[in-house]
Length: 478
Image (cartoon, rainbow, N blue to C red; front, top):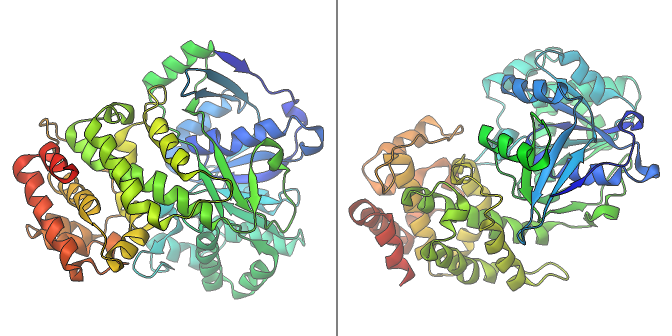
């Protein structure tokens, strides 16, 4: 394995970025780019201060602190060429549970020019039916009433910006790195809605002094298990308590809208553009939607690793048909992009045995993924009277996964759906399949009035229940 150490002195790097949500993806993606950029002497004011806000972050905070915030990133190549990067770009780490005041002070620090976020698709607290910020959430109401005692990301950011304004430290850029279409617009809607409700004068200042660029991020980064830690350390020869691993493909496209300056990330492969829409549409419609398409049928077949599922010819054919027949008509290629090559690369990435992503990770929080990755194109397919069989099969698979929680091999499992509503749970429990189409995740499309979709869906629900997922899938492929 090729070991690549940073060439800059970490103790001389200044912090210009705060990042909220120091998870595996952030450490394999944004830190990877910044770590490489810091080798340039004129870019050494762009180190990162990580901020963790959840009680569940305690272990990663302790692990990183025990090794002076350094960690290893192992990049597994599709061609068998692997590299291990020593990452030193995380210059500070604050845990809001133990140091809430320090979080606010860091956001207000005049050296901070950019705040980045990976708080997950569901973390923006938007009501799915209206895409508006949910001011009735109990934690939100608590933060609205007590601005000086924040507990949510919105409360902390508002408090930091309020102090920043009071100290006349100028504006900054809030850059979402989450897998959401128009993620900058989403972040702006969420944070400005909260701040407007809490402090209208601050909302005016934010509107004039804070920018919210859209961005598109891409790198498959699995969760790291205890077994993975042992494997990665054996390969690298390190004793790393917080190693991360990922695939060799990496992409970051950002709308060039930074109010307080930005790092020269184009030097390390980041693309800056006036409009990321065409890139977002390609990635969310092909990669993320295909991940969802892959997840529930594969899990119900008994697969637990993505690369193992990709050895199943029926799964591969199902995904390729979805890409070619259902999605490609609605995805214009970005400049200098070969769409057929992109789709082939996706299949190769999914099948990368060295990365070996967990199918359960792809299944996680489907209720937040369907509205973003599936519903926009499904609306167009319904409108255009396209073949809906593959998507209807996915919906039937998702219902079976949620309702019965047992795979084709007889293995029972627990679902991980943190954003299911009480109404959602009733629709899942109903014995009438059509009730399932009332789920909050599906409300952007009137599926119950699409007669052809309803007919296909109910037929596939019965096929999966009576014949099993394998025979039901084979039926739609032929």
